[in-house]
Length: 372
Picture (cartoon, rainbow, N blue to C red):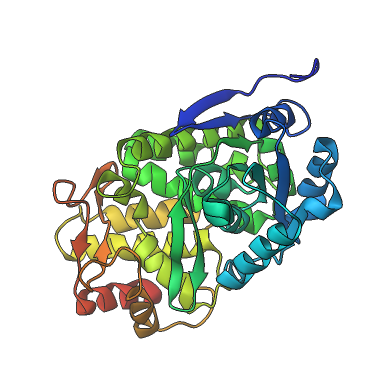
């Protein structure tokens, strides 16, 4: 570690991944990346938004030449097999071997795609995640899920591939557009709802500090990242491959992913998940699985975090319903929902955390949510 480098505010471990929270990319974080790479040749992967802001300076400090830096076009629409092919072909043409390491610098799209490239390149090489969005810091970079979207649906081609290192530097959130920051808060809201009322109270009490016009308060941002990483890491440590309790992390995601896909990815992931949680809370209430106040709690919390309650563009209930049919959580051709029974409680916890819901019940909840 360099002389000026200060230690991270928190360090966790998950399935071999070292997770550093609060480590500056200028100092301790960079040193950790260099150490984790172990002298291997580095392929830095970023996108057209994040590249100039963070990947290029980091590559310069690490001594990674231009020829070993790769960019994808920004946006969820580019998290696809075409970009995966372009990236892996580029690495092959550049002569990267099995002793190489991928460093993903960006949000969830970059992390998912670069992670999948690392998982599949020469049957697997290490990946280091350097998340630059709040959503990636507290969710996408944690837990080893990687993959790409297809015309049939979101994240349908992928692999579990844990990073060797995650460096989450809250300082980079200063460059994050406000809409993207709010999108990340949706995943924090999900974590709070599935965890406890105390966690939800803390999140709402600190909402203004995160949504400040001049950028999030750094101390609060660091605390929020740490709390959320601990929540997700604790779940993943119990259920790595999503056969049980890890399904609870999918609350709001069946409908949320469908909304995201139905919008042709014009809506951000977190925006879609916020609406998805509201719809799925209504489904749980209608089925008698949740307290009759859950949907209102989700609505109030989402509003406090300045998240949308309805789609930002015209969308029918049937379009959303159709988009759920290719959800990766489907079993035996039927879609399963991870439904909350209340704040801190999941429905069907003793039955694999999955609940099958009829089309009529889903449609009714979507119509209600979209009109209220």
